[in-house]
Length: 287
Image: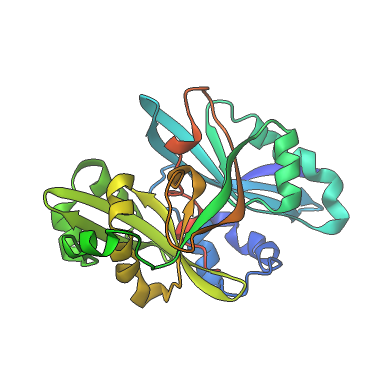
């Protein structure tokens, strides 16, 4: 008999054999636990839903909960991750997803759906959040090198603790212990931009993916500084930025790369540009 259950941290050991089936070779057992079962920023004890057959888990989808200020109010968010079904139990797909679809009081994000998952969730009413990422190599355009000389950056924990305030300080505190997150503070005069990036490999090439910037205009003015700050940790040959944050930006040899993300907002006022990639699997995922 099949049964879908909400699962918490106590279920990690029985869910882990399913997670090992993913082709992500960089993820250790501790990495999986940190990413999905010990989220420090959420007081919600639920970590996902599992489909059980004969008392054993045969399918799983992770739920990473947070709360963000979106379109004028505090919005409950559920970011999905690590959807997997054993082949012989794929007739239970809809049963596993039904509790997700019933989360009508949460904006639901699906940041890294497989092509098959994308089509399924799209048919279930999810909307495109993103279609492409912009690749920005570290080649200066007119005036960029000169602007970079007028700015500075820091990756020092002491500087971040001292200079970040308000929402940015809270974001840093929540993500400072994440395994993949890289933190940069860009400065220009009295202006500050807090940047969170993660390393990623595409076709064997290293990139740094920008997941959040508190001031996108300042980020683009000083993207060369951001790249220099991230280079020692990521060896990135270029920066990746979701298209919704790079529309209208031009850099030498810049190009687009397909990257499909989905979401289901609770309100029509919640637009894609309001959604960043924090509080998701991307903060701890090792590619």
